Amino acid sequence: TVANSFCVNQTLLKKLPYDTVHDLRPVALMGLSEHVLATHPGSGLKRVADIVAQAKAGKSLSYASFGQGTSAHLAGEMLKSALGTPDIVHVPYKGQAPALADLLGGQVSMMFGNWPEFRSHVASGKLVAIGMATAKRSVYAPDLPTLAEQGARVESNSWNGMLAPAGVSDDVVARVNREVNAALKVPHVAEALKKGGIADRSGTPAEFGDFIRSEIERYAVVIRQAHITAEG
Image (cartoon, rainbow, N blue to C red; front, side, top):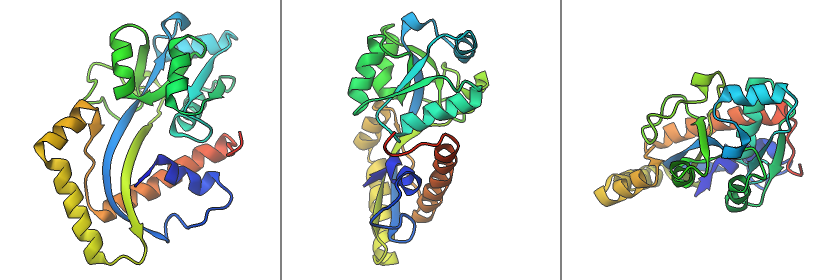
């Protein structure tokens, strides 16, 4: 299985032991978890306009990520570009857990992350959800505005999919795709995904291939514009 990093690495890493597009065949996109931008209550950041105001006032702001080149890192750079706030500092961590711990402790100002992991902290008041990094309002948080509604067009998520070696036949790819899609529709599986805030994005291998190519292109623009490297 593969995730966002599969598309990011095509541009981020100078040398890969494989060609992302030509050496592997898309089989099935299995699920997608939408990202939310959350802040610590003590930061005073409750909406996108607050970020802009504090940044322009010269206040020190930072955002945490799961690590250099991760989807949360790239989302932070998208936000900086969209808002024209280049001085927001990126603080990379080794995984989401330590990053979230420091956000909860107020050591960093904000962070992009999976809505399912943030939901309980937002409900308890330990975090403030500024907005969803989605094109339209999420079915999992319909009352929460998107960042785009607030003037920051940022789309970010985490996803998982299945690939096969390029030499695998069309018949095998099609059969596995059908089986995966059917499994995602099994009631108890579908319910578990829904409870976990994971959207069923099942479709054809061709659709998954188009999705991968669009993700590679989207991330490549961010990486180049922000001069992101694997080393930081």
